[in-house]
Image 1 (cartoon, rainbow, N blue to C red):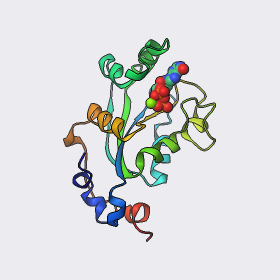
Image 2: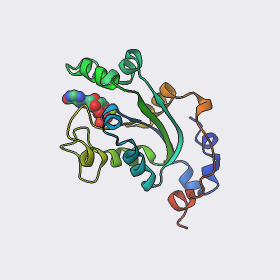
Image 3: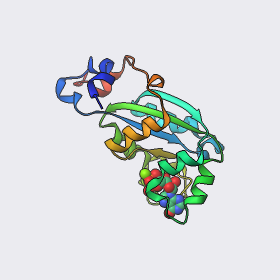
Image 4: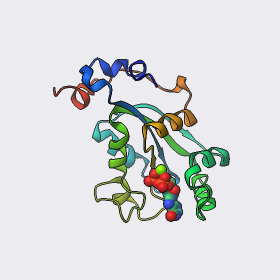
Length: 173
Ligand code: IDP
Ligand code: MG
């Protein structure tokens, strides 16, 4: 993916050495967060971290999309119940952009099993179970590119100048 093309507004605040580390990542806020009225809490944790949101929408996932999305676990015995759970309400899909954002978001989200996740993470602080562990987040550069395309068209991704970029991503202030 051409890093410079999608990050022109962010680049105004960055030194060239940081440009190579700019990434995008896909987050899904899962049905348990919607049911438990914790969507705002999840968004707020990402906002407080200073993440730059470049896309967001509500969408109801179908079985085909979920089978693609969870291809790596589709042979597992829990897969049918995972699909049923993920289709029980719409999800909120978000794309964040920033330096090393893929690992940073996974750090804020925490380990897959909320009971093994570190305190302070979304999963540890707000949930107790798999599959209902609040949030999906891309786990690699390759996965994020595929997942963002799966959930968003190019026209739904926004480039804009966020005035705080220089605090979060610049060379200090
Ligand atoms: P991740 O979401 O931390 O990347 P993955 O291994 O990719 O974890 O699994 C995708 C999702 O499948 C998990 O977030 C969780 O909702 C569900 N899941 C994973 N393992 C189990 C399990 O053992 N039982 C039920 N659901 C599971
Ligand atoms: Mg995963």
